[in-house]
Amino acid sequence: MGPGRSHATFLFVAERVAGLLGFDDDPWSLRMRLLMNVLWFILGGWISGTLWLLAGVLLAITVVGLPWTPAAFRIAGFTYWPFGKVVVERDTGAVSLLLNILWLLLAGWWLALHHVVLAVALAVTIIGIPFAWQHLKLAVLSLTPVGKGVAEV
Image 1 (spheres, helix red, strand yellow):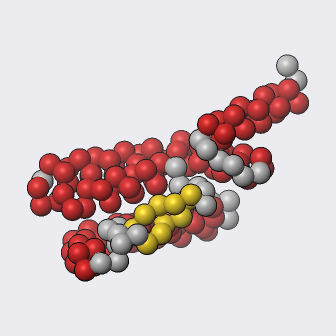
Image 2 (cartoon, one colour; image 1 turned 90 degrees about the vertical axis):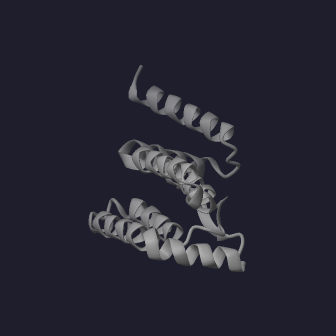
């Protein structure tokens, strides 16, 4: 099996996996999105996503944290597989505003700061710029998560 054959096999598998995940874009975009998501997951996305899942479970256990539980699970899903997704506004009501203010004061600012610091460190490496962009999206989402959603591009 030569190098051309293994490359063709990878492309075949990547297109099939992307098709199973519901991507209907051009093959190049699908392959890049899949490759970047796999790299993201292997290089640390699984840790962040799992921590957000754990945070969601802990928030659910404490009755006081129940309003933030869906947001933590939404962020976990976004953290596992961020490429090809964007953060969108879903609900901008008074309850969302109040919950976001409380979140911002208690946890949001330091979570967002953490993602911004990681983004800056990754952007300095040049090759890490795509990952830095994902950390900036996570910073915006972790700053005020209630009333936000994640949509496919």
